Image (cartoon, rainbow, N blue to C red):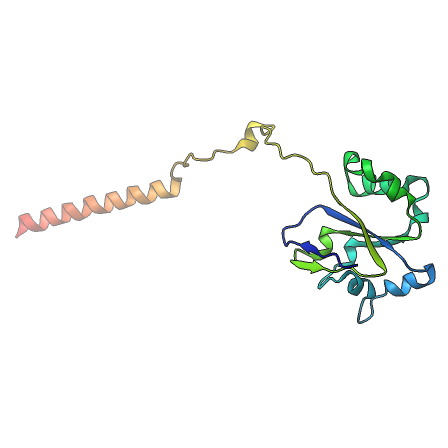
Length: 178
């Protein structure tokens, strides 16, 4: 496969689905990590976090099917799966699912090769950002208002003023006496 997949460091919420063309007895070896990781090499990835990579037989999904798993398990919107359901649910053997988190925010270019074949890339559904008002007055805070001086600060100011007055009185007495 000569496709190049560019991963940006800011990529978020992308789910890539690959068909894995291997006999079942070779899949375990393909996913074994001991010094090198054949799956990572076939994907052409410089860095790959195994916690965000799934390799499993499609028979594990039973009636749910791959499209149902992507929709319910990965939050892919049903509208995005509409044209792909038949193809996804018609796959057999093993499948590899790689999410954006697998790249740990590192920019890289994937060059997948056999036994991997990219089936599709999907975007996870994200909730729109909303700026609802805070639920209570106490949670709102007082931004912009400067608090008044503390009691300790006021006491220090009064003591400084008293010392200044005493200094002036002593200076006047010394001036009159001379």
